[in-house]
Image (cartoon, rainbow, N blue to C red; front, side):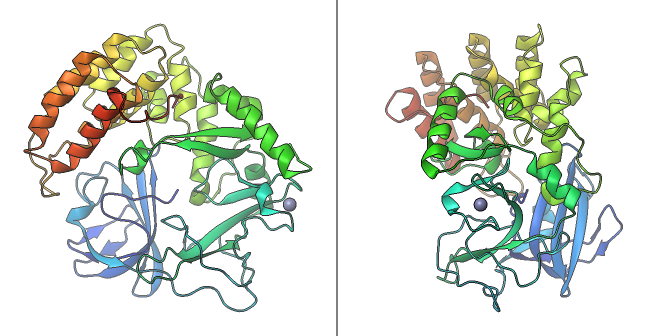
Length: 434
Ligand SMILES: [Zn+2]
């Protein structure tokens, strides 16, 4: 999954500020420049990978996520200076269909390394290599990976999106290039359910990607629809079911591959692999293993959190996770707090206590921000998501608002928005499970 890590994103030119060596032994010197084409973070294996072009050649760097001696999560500013955006060169020429300007999502998938795109076979704006109405096209499992299926004929295509969002050129375009992947990889990917995202809550305020939640419905891989109307009707039924049934159960009901992922499956498809591993977890497994898959960034968080909540000691587990100094456990604590319904009062009082205890020490890396801004923001969001409308909650948040304004003005908007939500003056965020 392409993502952002600290201030780094895809299609960005960077200069190296301090020399380092990555996990595979690549040596990079201070002063080197390059263009980042793709970033990935595997929060299960705790590795970050950066695909970049250095001296005109593609290169892949890997780092330990929690490194304390080189580039790592929260440490990228010490190693890379942002030199601005570096979009890919113009639309593919040759036999590519004409590409009309269109708004494209940020961070297009632009991996320079395998799997390679099939040369000169752009699908234009279509994401599936069939001739059906694109209204039948749905992503397979994830909107961000680039595997799409046709719900009419069943064709599944993995693509790489190329394009420019027009932010800097004024000329927005996107096109999809089919990827060459081994047949057994393709058939394993094709066995996953198709999805439709029905709601997102990132409109509350501009927030870190990992805090954004979305509600999806699952469509079985084998299901076919004669007309777009049939498909729409089926999805409306699934949507009604989504409000009643936990997401993990809905996913299992839709059908997932029983076979393990191919060993050499490209990292591009890492979300599928992690989700498959989550589906193999058992409630009796050691808690730290389950917690790792339950954190917010894990594609299997809802599967893992449903297992943890089957345990009898679930409430102490949730409270311990929220209070934990370990960011991974904190993150899983938020997922669990959302999934534990109805919300026990202890969850709300713990979140308030933690918020009030956050030190106002300034960040070393980011001017004008407190060091714990991420923790503060996610706890505030949790209260909004839990719709904690108690007058005590509102009183504490008002007190925090007066305090935070002196230390981190970026956190004022999330706090004000949450207060509006809790007072019933703004639409609440989604109420469904994580
Ligand atoms: Zn089709």
